[in-house]
Length: 186
Image 1 (cartoon, rainbow, N blue to C red):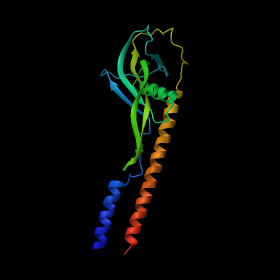
Image 2: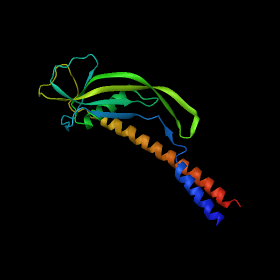
Image 3: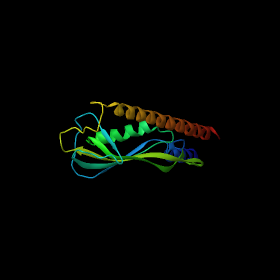
Image 4: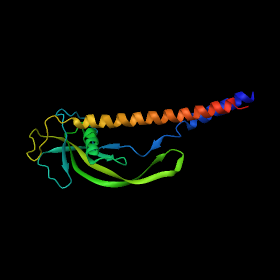
């Protein structure tokens, strides 16, 4: 009876703490706040960027606010790719008022606050827009079908997923090892 109780307690512990070696705070995040209830589709395969202070000569509709927060070693190019990818997924034709700032962020392992590290994360924000006219802006020069940003974001997300799977596997192996050790000890 005592052995069954011990196994039940250990299984419960495994269930609640299987993520003890899982990291947090060191990945790129994207948030989108819609500014309209309409849904759109991007048919051009490109996203134009207008940085803060750049005037826009075309008519447009603001469809959402995008914020991309970078991981510790994120490049500006990767974060711009995330910004463009989010705009593309929401059906935007461009992102206006793009600006860069920094935000304090923490990274570390769950249940290991002693080794947590604070860092200044790069942040890009902008307003996703949909053109309401059909006239191209002469101020914008982009490749007609620049979709490399989608591939770059997908590769980064796959790498994050693989890293998370590895962390979970290591964590589970360690906890199974503890479980075996406890069960075989008399």
